Length: 201
Image 1: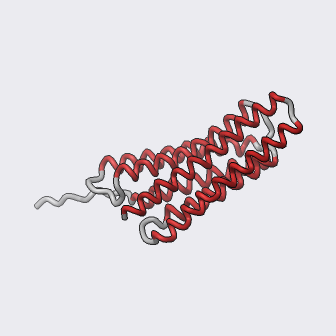
Image 2: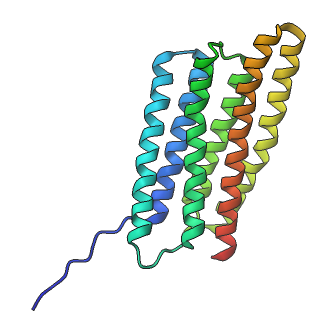
Image 3: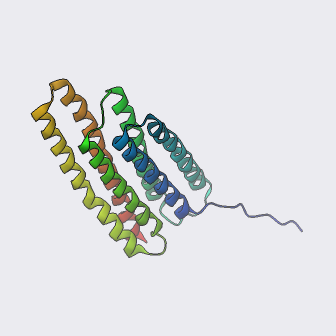
């Protein structure tokens, strides 16, 4: 008699949580970079983004192999994609700061600190999808509430620049603020995807 060993399958909830943890790790490093200007920390953001890409590749591979998924395939793919995009924005924020050769200012440090707070609550939202839907929902809604805070800080930073800086400096910082603000927008969209998943469960 032949016995077929069942393939060891990754848990999709665990993989999503690992992705969320990578997002938080990248945001923590980005926040530290904007607070210290350390190039060593900047390089760690780049490495974390690459690690996050690998976690997503594993998740996509598991989606393709699975006969049944606990979450609608399209919703699972989209939530994973949005989490990956948030981490991508952490990496490209470092790229922009370096490209424009600017020194992170107080508002940039405050924005990235808020983005880190969003990422930490994204972990709580994602990790509770499977067993604690109400907690996941509450955390997702809290993350969404922080998106406006990021926008307000970016506006404040721009206002300060217009009062004290030349137009070249204003242009450089405006692009970085815009990028960081969009990072919060993507995190907000990720939580919209999560809330959609919860509605279907």
